[in-house]
Length: 552
Image 1 (cartoon, rainbow, N blue to C red):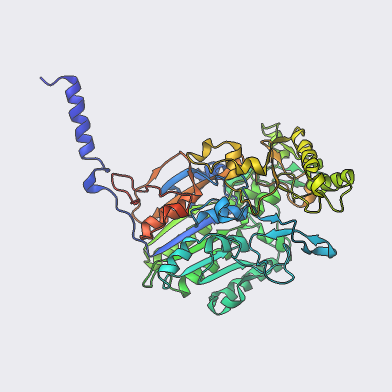
Image 2: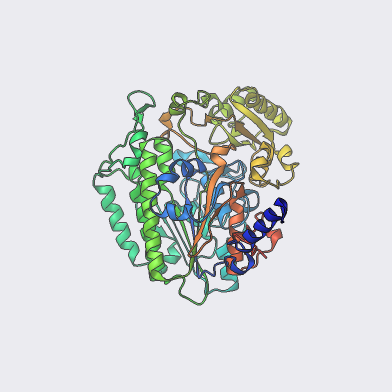
């Protein structure tokens, strides 16, 4: 008689032999002719998890593919430009050079607004253009130090087409790269491209811009989806102002238009017009369509992330992505889609404080460099503010006009001001960051200084870096125009979903962390693009739910 252990062993062997993961039935890697890379600005893992059961459109399809709910924008400077720079380069901001949306170069003062000197550098700016400054610039990928996947593809085979479309210039530039077939973004009034690319603009762009103008010119009546009724609660943000309940868009309000599902829908319409007219995926080489959808970010900044406004936006995003899939399916083009985000986001402290997070608060205005810099200049008798920065956290730059004999004393005074403030978690000097090795291993386990090191560029980073404590919103008050933001080194800003889907995908979910820098080498493995490992920070992720692997 067979003993119990032997019977169990035989049963286990039978199960393995008939498993869907057996060698003879292992899923095969896709062979796409089109790579569709989507970034949803400020689409945090928290949002993905909160609304996952409510998805009925494109997000439902993506969530049913290969799901990494705990992807990471692993660096500390969780902003739009750095985040977008990681997605299709395979590199962290320390390598891409895109350390923030904007940074300072105290040695190069330029004419700015109202005749004031502008030391700022915008991440998608062509700094070689005469008269350019961080608020009035010519859009360019010149500051991106590394190639994107599209750049690598076109260097090998110029027949590959690369199209990048975004609601923000930096989203399109950082995902498209230096050598695109078409780059288009919203300039505040319409979608436009580089001047030299006007001939490449799809004919459908005129219709999209016409519809965008019409959407701005007339009031919009937005219906609250049933799934969002429980999120509709007014929260005071000062005076009589509130957020949390769905507000109707007034005629002529272009800013409110950006913070709406209509904005994403038209951005996608433009991307699909380019897809159809350029016959992406139907040529002799593999093509790339990179789309960055910006409305979720504008909604999060304007209203916070937990009210009826964001819930309504997520429902609209789901529908827009569903429509995209319908068009792609009808084309019969073999495609693979990856969706992620440039960063996460955190809700406004006023709502957090009444919803179980009393530690949430706004940053003390005394941390703003616009106040600290002049105060130190007065103490040390300096000709201009001692430090430069545009927020109460992140990179801080010492003025180059500080005499050498005073520089150490000024730095020590600045460090003391920030380090002794109760809202500050840490202040790390440039020398301390530079002495830290580039991080490796699971991004969720990195120390704070390792996160900062991942977006450190010695030629662009500041003299010291300020990290606020968890749940401190770096907006002192709502008069600044936004009520909530991102940019911190904490999990709510770093964690983003990473979702892969293609026809016939064998789905699985992996809860452990991967980086957005892993996306490019993973996609490269699917299309046979060789990327030297020493040129990137990311790694190829095995997407095959079985014994086979797409990674070589």
